Length: 390
Ligand code: MG
Image (cartoon, helix red, strand yellow):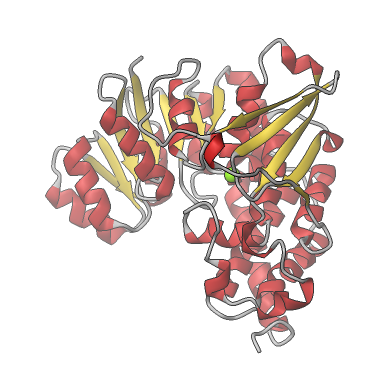
C-alpha cells in the first residue's frame, strides 16, 4: 500500500487527524498536496513537515507570504488552489475534509481522474449527489466515506449482501438538545449549541449537530452514496455514539459497526480499504459502557429531518438549497442575528420559495449556491425582527 494523497482541508479536525495517521504510517501513505482555509500558522508547519509539492491557502495575501517562505512548493490560493491540490501530479487519493461547498468542483474533477475519494465533506453529495453518481459510473472511480455513519454502513454491506439490503438505520448522538422541550428552544444560547456531548468537531458542524441538520445532511448523503430509496432510510437517536449506524436485510437480520467515537478509525479505514491495519486509537471496551440507548427522533421538534426527506423526494437542486440556506442561517445564528429556531424557519422558507431545477453541470453549482445564499441573506434581513434574540 502506498497511497499518494491530496488533502483538502488540512488544518481542520478531519485534516489534522488524517495527517496524524499519515505521520504514523510513512510506509503506507505520503502527502503530495495540501489545501487549507485560513490557518496560515498551521499550514506553514504542515508544509515544513510534509514537504508537499503543491499547497494552497484561501487568501491571496497569505499565499504571497507562503511563496517567499517555501520556494520548493507550488503555492496557490482560492478555488483555483483547491483544484491544483486535487489534481497535483502523482495523486491517487483525495481526502476531502473541507467544510462547506468550496471543494465540490475540485472533487468532481478528481472523480473524473479516477482517483479514490475519501469523503468527509458531506456537502459534496448533498449538493451534487446526482452528478457525483453519474461521474462515478462514467469514470470508474470510488468514494470511500469518512463520515462515521456512512463508514459504518459501508462496512456492513458487502458486494454480495447489497442486493438483500432492506434499509439503513443512521444513528445520531442527538446533540445537546434532543431531550429539551421544544418551548425552550427559543432560549438556546450560542455556547449551549457549541457544547456537543460526544464529538469534538469544527464550529459549523457542531451547530449542525445541535439542530440535527448534520443528520439531515447525512440522510441525503446516504441516499446518494448507497443509491437508496426514500423509504430505505431510518434514523435512531443513540446518545452514546458507539454504534455508528446499522443495516437491515430482507430477513430482518441487522448488522452494525461499533467503535469508540474517534474519527481516526473511519479516516484510516477510508485510506486503507479494503485492507485494515493497527490503529493507536482507544479500544472499545463494552463492559465499561453500562448501556447503549436508542430513541426515536422527533421530526416535529427537529424539522431538519423532515426537510431532509423532502429533499430526497424533490432531488435536483433541493439539497443545494437546503445546504446553502443552512450555511447562511448558521452564520446568522453565530453572529447573534437570529435565534436558534430561526435556523429552521430560514431553511424552511428557502426550500419553499426557491425554484427546484436540475443541476446540469459542475459549472452551475457555484452560481446556484451564491444565488441561494444571497436570497437567504435578504430573507433574514427582512425578517430578522421575528427571530431576533430576546
Ligand atoms: Mg457523522
